[in-house]
Length: 324
Image (cartoon, rainbow, N blue to C red):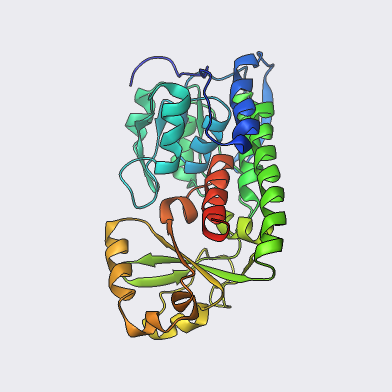
């Protein structure tokens, strides 16, 4: 897709009342004024960004999320983990707010197409905390490249990253309003979950073709579950600094048998493996299976996405599961 980045959003009507705050954040992009040059503290030192960037490329799912929340449609983006396009949850915003316009694919999560990025002639590139220095050096020759400082795995990393991207985009207020919309949604759900499901536990598992992996307590999805009052555990199976456990055997699934089990898959191969496992006696014996408290969720959202819009989509899933 050639031409200038679509930095001004059209008015859109969201279906649920709780999205009013987010709609305000998105529409706030219309009122953004020019800014003086600002210096950002990034993983690779200070980066200077001038004014309000108009040609933006995101090479990280969290950066795409924050950009859309800020009212900017990037010219380019990478695919979601395990997929061939961006995550499904974000494409709804393309239709609602950008008349179906969408970014060009400029690579996958771990393999950026530098030539495809260059072809977009960006004036700003937003990248992942894990971006290797070799790739950073190449990208930073094309345009100022903002890489959030690494902070290990922490459930609120997405907020810090979104704020940094908002500052780079000169859309700080819009991003802050989107984060506030998440906080308000968490508060509303917490009160209802405390009343209907007090002190209940949960595990989040991503099912791969090779089997089940327990997800860390320090990811965005598990962090949100904890925030709304569901006690998430990793059963002590995850090494420090890792996002997930090693693959569990079917016989060891009892180690993650709490009140709720959120089961994520990334693609069709993972879904097929999960479908086969759910027919096994080991799975059927689980308390969560017998109580029908196994909740299928989108692994691209629950174990890969990041940002305020991802947080809102995850909270939707939590509400649908626990408060139907």
